[in-house]
Image (cartoon, rainbow over all chains, first blue to last red; front, side, top):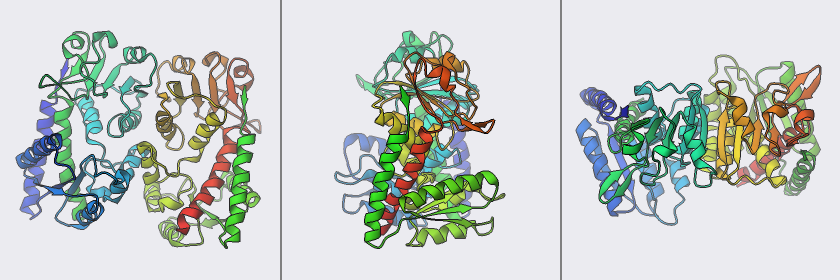
Length: 274
Length: 274
C-alpha cells in the first residue's frame, strides 16, 4: 500500500477554508506572522510555500523581518496583537540570540508550530495543545490509513525536538512500544527490521532500502532531501514499496504537515478570540 | 555490582546543607511548601518523610491544606511569596480540579519537582530546568557508577509522566538508544533481555527476576511496593543480583530522589532571589 497525504491534506484544507469563511463572516481574519531574521534562499522558498498555502485557504500572511536586538520585543508585540492568530519563529534565530528564550517568550496560544516548552510539556503530559506539525502529521496519516498502533513495535530513527522526541511521546499515548534510534545507535538495522511501524526522520537520501524493513511493515518517510534537483525521502521508495506499505515523498507527510499548520492558525484564532 | 544510593545521596545532602548555611548567613532560609488536599495516611507518611529531610538540611517546611475552591489561589499566593522557594502540588488534587491547570499555574521557577508543562518541555528540548526528581535520580545514579549510556540499549518499563517519559528524553540526551515499554507491550521479555540498561518502573513487586535480564546488564529499580509490611522493588533482587548490576530498594533511587528534591529547593531559592 502507498500512503499518500493528498486526500487527508485536502480534507483538512477544505475544513480550514470553511472555518476561515465563517470566521470572516464574523469579521475575523485568521492571520499568521513569520518572524524571520535571515533572507537566505531556503528560508525564502519555505516562506513562499507557507504564503501560498495561506492564500489558498484565506489566511492573512506576512513576514516580520527582525534582528538580534528586536526579536524578543517583536514576539512580545505579536503576542498581544489581537489581529494576529499564529506566530512562527523561523529557525535559525539571529546569532547570539538564545532560541529557547525566544520560544519561551512566545504566547503558547499563538504557537501554531507547537515549539514552546509549554506546548511540548503538554505533549509529554498527554493533554491537548499545539503539537509539532510534522509529528502530528505522522500520527494523522497513520490514523487515516487505520494503522493500529496499540502494542505495535514502532521504531523512530531521528531524535529531533520537532519530530523524533515529540513523536515518541505521541506514539506512547497511542499505546505503541517505542524505540528511538539515532546516529549513536548500535545495530540500527536490527531495530528497523523488527519494527511494525518505522518512522524515518534522519535527513539522509534513500538511506533505508528493502533490506532494512520487515515484510509487511508500515514505513513513514519524514525525510526531505534534494538529490539532483529532485526531492527524495530517507526511504528508497522503489525498493521498499515492494515489501512494505510506505508513504510518498513528496506528497506524503509534508503535504499533511502544511495543512495542519493552516488548521492550527484557525484554531489559534478561535483560542485568541476568547 | 550493587548500586546503592547511600553515598551519592549523602554527598548531595552535605552539599545542600552547606549551601543552606551560607544562604542563612545572608538572611535567606530556603522554604518548601506542600499543597495538600487530602489527609489520607499514605500522603501523611510521604509528607513526614519530606519534612524530616527538610529538617536535616535546614530547609523550612510546611504543608498548606487546600480544597477545590482555593487551590488555584493558594498556588498563586505561593508563586509571588518571596519567602517561599519551592512548591509541591501533592497528587491527587481535589476532585473536580484539573491537575494540569494547577500545574500550569505554578511558577516554573518554584516547581522543584519538575512537573509543570514548561519544565517538562525543557526536558524535551534538552535545556536546563527542574526535572522530575525520580528520573533525575536515575540519571545521576548511573553517572555516579560511571555507566556509559552512549549507544547503550536502554529499556524503560513504565511510561508515567514523572518517570518513564521524561527519563526516555533524558536518556536520548545522553545518546542512549531508548525503548519504552508498558502494559500494552508485546514480547516484553524480549525487550528487557536485550537491554544493556533496564529501568523498572511499573509498580509490581519483584516482577523481573533473572530470567528477564541480560547477563551483565545494569538494572535500575524504581519500584516501591509494600509486601507483608516490607518495601520491595519491581526487581527480584536476590535472583537478578547474581547475573547483573542492580540498584537496591530501599536505599537506591529513592534515597537519591529525596536528596535531589532538597537540592532543587535550594536551587529554587537562588533562582527566586534574583
